[in-house]
Image (tube, rainbow, N blue to C red; front, side):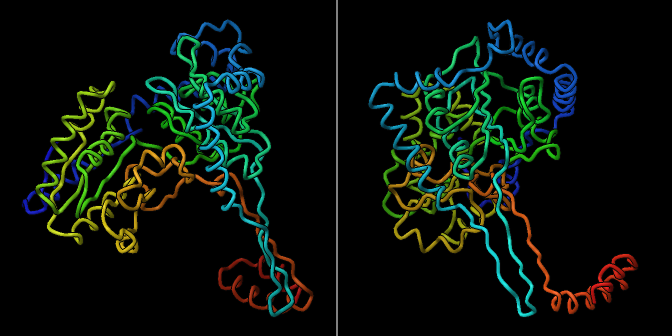
Length: 428
């Protein structure tokens, strides 16, 4: 894991290089994904089945074998060991409670001219949620995607999840039952995204696709954007930990490893003004690494994209935090609320020494689907608002129409739009 110091003349160059990452700009990747999407559009279920058999070695011989029934989901939930079931229910309850506070009401007001203006909020009709399979299974992703959609009032939630060799973690199915998912299909990759976006013989096209996946999924989401909405183009998971004052280096090391174990291209960055703490954290990382089942993944991540950064002071740290715009930011310090107003760019901010990012992944309540790769500069966590759309309401009174039409007439003529001007002028 590389060590950097802001005192080095080449620091900014090294730091910028560390942050650079392209997810879906590989021409060969884009060409492959475009071909998959075109074939799914043309051949429908048959091509989705063929690709699922090819890439996932799924034993299904007919497309309908890829769909799970509601009773299978319920059975998976009921067969969970009680401790696991209770933890899943706690997480679902907290996620639902948090997201219920995001629900936006319709609103209207009457202006000084007697016109009624307002906003109508409507849930999307149908959404697709992508849940990763493969290297790890993520029941938490089911909860984080499906519960906000259900709270928003989405009429149909379709979940796709790859099932290598036909096998699925029962927790994923249990989470789907608990979260209110309507349909579950064991398909993944670009073919699943294409099926959701354009529909097949048995899948109705959705209005929006959310949830993380591999680079093929990310490229496919980018390709279908416009046909459907998407939440974001998700890059590798990332964490930035800032620590000052009295901290336990063992805790900090494990927080950094919690992201590194996700994927070889995940990113973990530690920033501190304390040189001694930096060395203690480095030693703790090495000690913890040998205990992890996913140690090789974590080690590769730390070697390629991780960093221990020594800064002069808190002000320098804040500048770097806002430059990174991290997906997850931990502020391990006394009175972290003092620093909060200066943090402009972060997906989720974990305050104090007792708020590890891992709790946010599962059961704190706020969503763990967060902007990555610096997109927290302009993006927000997934929420209820992502599953709703807003319509403006304009209801002019006769008097209000006459008054506003005069201004509209003048402005339309200035733009050279004669029909616009006439349309307004007829009401004046």
